[in-house]
Image (tube, rainbow, N blue to C red; front, side, top):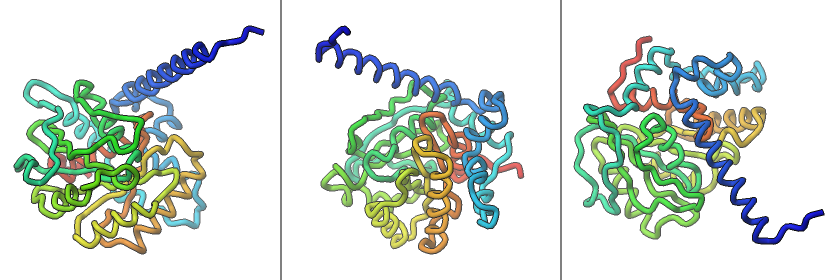
Amino acid sequence: MVQLTKARKLQIINCLLRRNVVNRGSLQTKYASFLEVLKLQEKQYTGIASPLQELAKYIAPSVDTSCFQIFNPNHEDIKRAEVFFIPSRQHIIDYFISAVRMDHAPQLSQPEVCFLGRSNVGKSSLIKALFALAPDVEVKVSKHPGHTKKINFFKVGKLFTMVDMPGYGYRAPEDFAEMVEPYLTQRQNLKRTFLLVDGVIGIQPADRIAIEMLEEFGIPYVFVLTKIDRAPKAVMAKNVIQIQDFIKKNTQGCFPQVFPVSSVYCSGIHVLRCFIAHIAGSLHLSS
């Protein structure tokens, strides 16, 4: 048997890791467009285009899943929304600016949505997936928690702005509250806050603090469940029902439907794009 040196073993591991990153990126690019997803067979199509519908198969018939259909755009709505995420000379999509304080934030009149969540929950990865049809947009994604230290603004043409907030919890910036609370409470053009929760482990104590803050300030928000590709469907269905129950019993300003997503496979990304365009006022649903 050939004995590999430690250096050779590390070289092989690094090669495999790089290959895995390429494969994950290829999957994201492959399913970035809804037109490509429409070509898939029904089972695979449902898992990517409508994760909630896919998870409903694993839920007992006695459980009320009507909240899964509150925001239920048709194919034409999703395709129209996708156009807003494709750049052109007249419609520039790109990173705009970063800020560490509200007085550093750009004064923009166009509608804004922001993404908030624990460190390492996948905020930057989600934004990168949403911008998968605009590959030149620089969204920095790190494997290390707490990478985002500033409030990062991304302009989607002249239609709306998407904002990546620093993560809370582990390795959060020391001045996190001073950065985030003024933005959430003072930003007049903020239309919705997307609160990201790890779909595998559910709502954590740090998430509850964020929820209490949003509820106290009366800020409209939405739950986005990330990393749904990392758990068996039955486990994920159970987590979704528990979180929907939490929303019903413990929140006032939260949208009653959750949005499960996978930034790896673009699952749920197309519907989330549609929801963002809708609440930003750029898209009126046809049904």
